[in-house]
Image 1 (cartoon, rainbow, N blue to C red):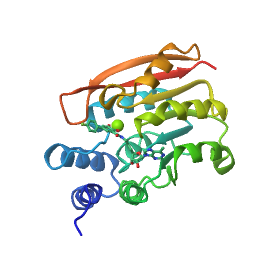
Image 2: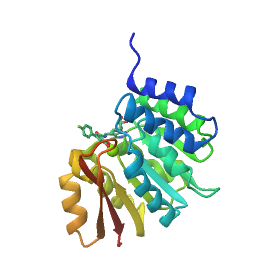
Image 3: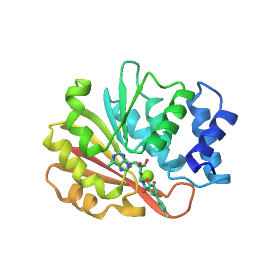
Length: 214
Ligand SMILES: Cc1ncnc2c1ncn2[C@@H]1O[C@H](/C=C/CNC(=O)c2cc(-c3ccc(F)cc3)cc(O)c2O)[C@@H](O)[C@H]1O
Ligand SMILES: [Mg+2]
């Protein structure tokens, strides 16, 4: 049967990227998505903004919602100091299988814990599974209608602390109107918008950074 786009993306990484070199894996995926097949990775332009926020926060505990092929997982994990861990949630087994191989190829398997499951089910289990008290950083890039319920769940599970940073992809395209309205109007968050473009295109998109105020 015909391969899937994530499988073709993985093949490009295995054939063209340098094993153990995260930057090479990132560049290979960006080249593949720009010149062969578009895929919904955060991409190089928004990825640079993601990098700068991760470096600024330098989190000891980080969570990613929506692994897909592991592109942003590699971007984040490559910047984490030793001894810190990125937990990434993915409920599609086929995507999780590709992402595991991309993360492994980049040599970042010791910094990443990929959990197969739905965010709504797994978030309440974070404390018991990982001994996490709170998350310093959360990257939201899964189904857009899950952003709002999932941050409310993080709040409810006391997994955010004063100063926790949320960074959300696609707040313009495809768009997350309810999420934006909430984080921009809630007294519990201070938000700012980073204007950019939809990955590999000239279409406007952006990232919303929100600080939890407690
Ligand atoms: C509750 C739950 N739990 C666990 N995993 C979950 C989960 N909900 C989804 N997932 C997982 O996360 C990824 C899904 C990502 C969804 N992202 C987008 O839809 C997306 C779309 C575009 C886009 C823009 C313009 C277009 F014309 C077409 C597409 C760009 C993007 O950057 C996107 O992120 C995918 O791997 C899915 O299995
Ligand atoms: Mg996205």
